[in-house]
Length: 228
View 1 (tube, rainbow, N blue to C red):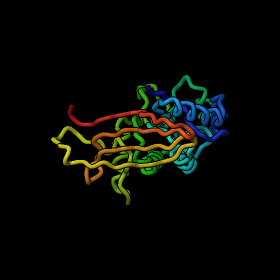
View 2 (view 1 turned 120 degrees about the horizontal axis):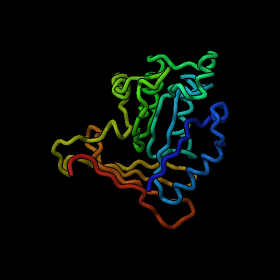
View 3 (view 1 turned 135 degrees about the vertical axis):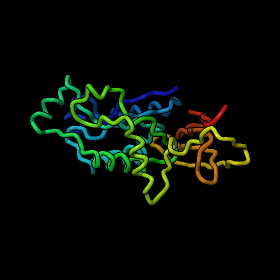
């Protein structure tokens, strides 16, 4: 019911520089096909790739969450790190690629989190790579906590789902209200029905998809947070 796609970037020049051997047009088609067949879409996105910059990464992520051709349901947002066996090592030795500084990386990731719509969940920010295997790049396993600390000073509240999930405290139906977020993709009208508290914490949601030119609707996902 869910398909994960290793997109990494939506910039064709960067995809080519990284040897991804895929066209942006193919990614567009994959999103449309998956959505029309009712799948949940989890996109993998990577910052600090060869040929990118912090500002370019922010624009690229904005395209992922703002362009109707994409708009995933979930995202795994990873910083690029160098391991010894990677072809990237040659570019690192030549000074063509360098890892972002910690401040640069936190700035990019915090901006991406802030730009994430309320119907999207950022599932992960760390790859399962041992710090001992990382030659260059982020080695801190609490990266997400560091990003969260950076976003706490943001002027607007973070809307992304994982940041709003209710914990295990006692709740009742009286504590939440139904809120509907409508958005349009290249192939459908989407309704994100979320049950939230007055503070915006999310207790559950339903993804309702209305494909263009079709008389049927699809429920692509139902999810409840908190204690069973």
